[in-house]
Image (cartoon, rainbow, N blue to C red; front, side, top):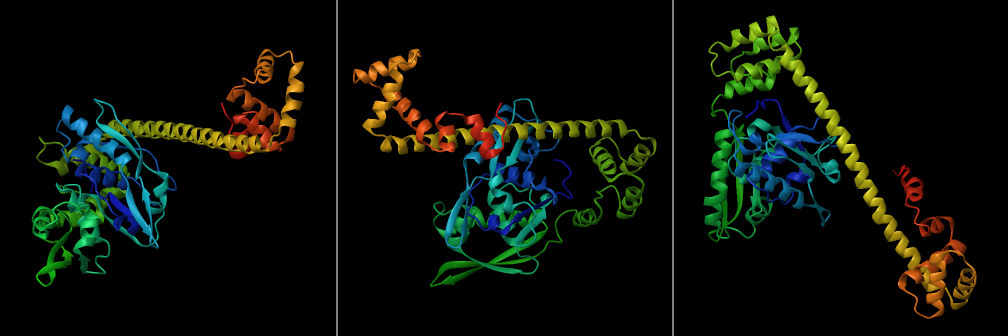
Length: 419
């Protein structure tokens, strides 16, 4: 798994308090995608998410066909699923992901958040929850993600949080599963707490609050976890971005001399070298003699190209989505206009229409005239008459719509040049 020491997940408390029912793979996808957002982002971008990271695998592992299909299914299901958020007793359902793409043999999937959820992820100033990606990525149970977020939501300001059992079931997506509290505790609650205490930055224990022998709520007691493996090294990484083979003092010296992105690239490379025993010395030589500079520049160039290509594809998709929206909107408005004038048009108007068509040299209009005179007119013929009526008596916008001039409509309504 990649080095995610300083990647952070930040989301609105509205999301944390929403009803969610995602799989482990989907929780990892959302966490990984969220961690790609920066504080200066005003729009969502497409991001490449490593399949190995989604599966919780190491970089040296291989992805089987079955695992690839599992990730694909998780991504497709994520697009079709939703979360429910309440605003003053009014609920709204949101799809978090609007786009997912992958290909066999490709080591990543491309994901993008839906623009509808921008208020819950971008430019957050208050009422949000944040945590480091490294504290959740190793979880093996989906409920661990949700319970961890709920515990981190107000911590450290609030170190004891009470949640009703029914509400907790809703938040975890277990309203209709493990209906007996004993099963819910054994299958969901206890394994999640155990995992959080083992792998994350917080330690949680809980007390069951009972009424007539029935558990009605749970009080969670939260504190900093100082007993997990490598906690001291992780604390250093929070401060400096260093990792286990480089101490804080050395990192601070090096980051003054070398670009931080380049330094972190070299550190990740050296950290992955299984056959190197003295990693600090190897790193210092690599930096001094520039061994890894070509690889870093190549990766940077590729990343820039990928970013430009992703932005280009994103713009194209946004344009196509807008065009489809315009087509649907135009058809809907056009039908309403035609229905309106079909109710207004009279037999006298039809007489004038047929009088004008009688001497027309246009083949189609001759056919329309003949069918009307034989009282065998089709729906298309009637629509042709209504179109004529609108062009003669409608306003400018209605005339434009009657002429089916979608290019003009797109320019007039959205300032879009239709190609």
